[in-house]
Image: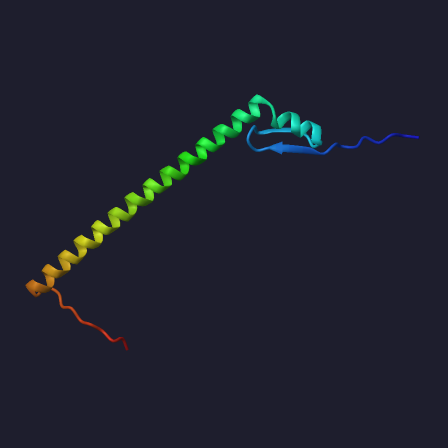
Length: 93
């Protein structure tokens, strides 16, 4: 009888960017390896840095928007006082 080649299941490690056998033993050996541990640590560091950079950028954006709002309110107040603009409290409609 003819034997058929059967593909073995593979597992992709997103940290190490490599394929390995999808068996419990192969995954355990890989997960306990130095390369994998270092890759996970590097990924976590990068992730923390990205989040920190996003927080800083968001804080900078919020501060800039507050400054723009403050300047716009000040300019509007000056425009109303000089008669260049009028202020209406609207009820809609």
